Amino acid sequence: MYQTIHEPIWVVGIYKNAQFIPKKFKWKDQELYISEITLSNNVKDGAILKRWYSVIAENNLYRIEFNRTSEQWQLLEIWVE
Amino acid sequence: MEKTILHVDINSYFATMLQQENPALRGVPVGVVKDAGRTCLIATSKEAKLQGVSTGFRKKDALQICPNIICVPASFERYLDTTKRLQKVFASISPSIYIYSLDEAFIDITDCRKHLYPDVHLLGKNIQEHIKNELGSWVTCNVGIANNRLMAKMASEVAPKGDIIEVTSKNKEALLASTPFKDVCGIGYGLSKKLALYNVYYPYQIRFIPEDELLALVGPFWATELQKIAYGEEPHGLSQLDREQPHMKSVGRSITGYRLYSDPTEIKHILRNLSLEIIEKVRTMHLAGRHISIGLYGQADSWSTHITLQSPTNHVFELLTQVDKLYDQWDHSFKVIKFSVRLSLLHPQQQDQLLPAWQKLESVQKALDTINSKYGRFTAHPAAVPAQKDLIHPEVTGFLGDRLYQLSTE
Image (tube, rainbow over all chains, first blue to last red; front, side, top):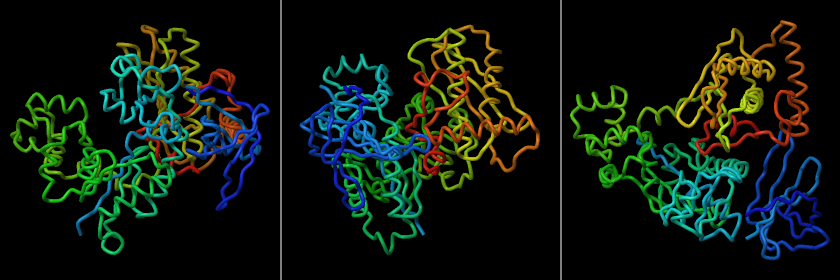
């Protein structure tokens, strides 16, 4: 099941073909390296644009969000077996 | 010139996208529920279908048949974004596309087949590859190719997962004689049940029902439609897709609750909450409507009523007032599980009214629109609606009945 987290995270990534690709993120003092982005989506909340990434880091699936208006990152959910 | 239509259907869309997102779900039976705590499966993965669990199953029944099924809440915003990406893929193939639902589309390549796509089977394969590149390697789709939408859709419905079927004069009759009604576009459960009384289970068999008997059984409209389907011709419903719809005629919203409701305050709150979403949609599309209806559904009972206003509205306060008035007509004779609100007779809002009362409502509404577009949907809303944390938020339906709103408002 997905466990709701909704906590701020700090993300490092690269730009490739005019697209940001997250490579690692820091959450609760741990650095997690992203090995795969399995899905990414643009979503809208009113005029606020958000980008959702589902990423695999350390063999776990994380749903992270980039708020394109406030330019802040958030860890939304983690998959727990 | 004979038409060439492709029907592309993503296999088990909701479940497949969840599996694409989460490798832990790949290859295992997955049931999709609308939300955490919901018990009805709105979609299932191909692995679950193989074990006999399909859409509409209750979670506890699914677990009995398939104890290792994993039930995951749907993510409608992701599906909608994915559909928009699919729309771009299809639009790169032909300018003539129709997104039929969240996970399926018709692509008309009649005008470009000769020069661009002489080998339609190869085109089908390219579409499948393109979709994998765009959405992920786990995502597969069926492609049906025919000279009309009915046969193209029928072909993709019966094709094995990830396959391509082209309907030709050689296999058309066989397809009509072997495709059960559940896979035929336009024939619903009730109609197929009626036809089953005559031991008619496949479109081809309709050809042998005497005309007067068919007329007596299903009436004049369906008798004509069924005759068309029996010969693989496009029925009215599908041929209407060519007709351009300038704007939505109505916007409605319904929701099934988690339990039965009897408290009038709770019921009113839900109806008002659904009204918020309707107003947001009609205002985004610059429409206003005159006909308001509400419906309440219990386990065995239902009740609905409506009102037609003298002038169109797209103001939340006016809609809430009217919805409350309509609700007050109800006799509270049953507990409610499903709620619906609809605003119809929609027309483009062409000019502002001069009445001071209207202008006051409009200025308040504009302020709400500005706040909500800047800080997020329903950030500011009338106090008569529940608190933010308890709000029901919009969702996309698989049928994509509001495609004009969802696919054209960017």
